[in-house]
Length: 253
Image (cartoon, rainbow, N blue to C red; front, side):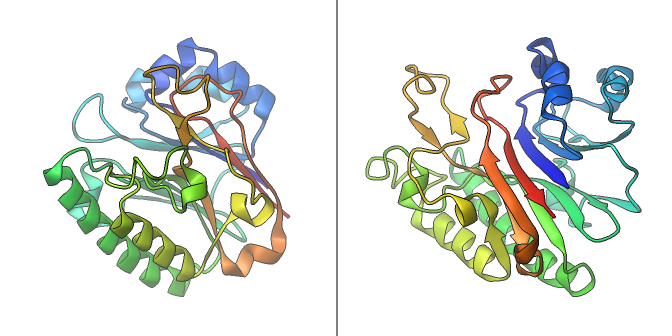
């Protein structure tokens, strides 16, 4: 099973840059999208179906043109769950889950902490999400949480750890939360296979950051410990340029 996570920073804009053609070439079984910034009615679902993804699930934010997640699949899930049931998470369209025979795939878009108010919201989201996942694992142990976590885990995951230590996304408290979340029962699939530096999934649009590879690794496919023995491959796909993020891929036996 090949799974991709991709923050497309606006699915309609990504489509104008060749996203659907790229999707056909990449050919994942399931792709989790974040920051779709559109409702289903605004998306060319027929073109995506023609590309090989007849099963499409969209969970937009209440606010138009903002946030939102989606899952596109070649095969029909047994069950699809929109949101978490926690209102402050769900009105921004940040969590969508598809249950398959032997695993469940979740698309997550964790908030960024762009100012004090949003940073407080981010920490509330993180705490409530941890509780939600702890409970969910009791009934769904084989969980793959794909998405934009808006946090770099370690110094190796950011181009300038010293100057960014006071910036949201690399704050000690954020990193500690992500570390604890992983230790609560998840494998960072990319780091399972690759311990090298300079691998990023997001770059600022400013100052030629992407061309100079001055990026952040904030997109993850976290895999339940119960699936660790089935991990086959995990890579970042920086050549896909439909967004300020790039896709991250994991393969499960």
